Image (cartoon, rainbow, N blue to C red):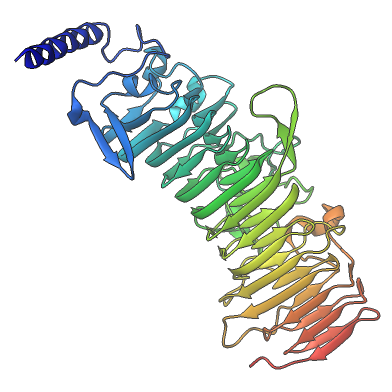
Length: 492
């Protein structure tokens, strides 16, 4: 009996403490100490999943109160949570980095949760780089959140859905719909940064920095101008089973049809950033890259040090309707594309020195399935299948091979192929961005000492910029180079 009395007394005091705690709370951020734990009222707010016991919080204020804490497992109550400029003035999300996960060793489950962001938020923060979600801590997993941008208002500077920073953090099962940029619908015809003919206010998807971070099982649908997923100073990055999709592709003829309508393109007389008028006959993406790397950036912590992109693996991913599907032409260490698919992009795959492309697929409808970025790139290994490219639009080759000591194997899933386009070794890329001598450092590459196995029926064109290459082909070949060796094989 004494034991029972002690238990009753114990839980009576717990009840009193709970009442005291809630009397200082509420939905307002005022009075919430970021270091104080979130208190739940009973065991019904705890739920176990995959061996993790989650505590459910029911308001955004309570959710925000957990973001600086370590060793918490938080589930936000299902529902749609909408955010707009009023939430800045109310103090709910006063910072242009809206939701920053700063703790360590924590898990966040957003199953059946949608965050809706009014794109008027982007400019409401002034000339700041708006970031909707940012992982900054260590060993944090966030999963199953749906993010929707509502509207098409552009930022005063630029915006991003997410910064994946910190160390060993994971984003799993997200679905992001991105919108709100200026100008929209022209791709990079009029520039993309400094020196642009039309000033740009971008809104990108996910920027990956930090060390050992993972993005997986996610979808990003972009309706704004900017990269969908890009890496800048990230080390040991894994991107697995991620689908990215841009808007419908657009012909340059359609852009030119804006003449006399007072659109941004019309107002600059269709003068591209490359110094010539928009040419007819090309297909463009309204987005930037699907998956892209840059060489370096300032460390995400802002400590003034430079962080270099290093060791990136992208596998089981798909990119559709973007400027370049898969582009890892900058960085250090091991760069790998594995089991990835490019669909109707301006270009399919590009990778840097020593990179590996294995068991990947790309069509060549609106740009080359594979292209080399710089002439000094070498020792790249490619295993790529050309998929249905019927209805090609533009002047591009099926694939463009430059540099040295490349090992390229091209297969085809097509029963018949057009003979009007070739797999090209060296010379002119025949691309929209290289007309009239523009970007000359990225064009007219020499191709030397490389091995190309062409198991497609597309013709091979060895230009006068090619020498000392070994080519195995089951179709036709034209050799205008020097000291190349060609060997006929069977397409069967």
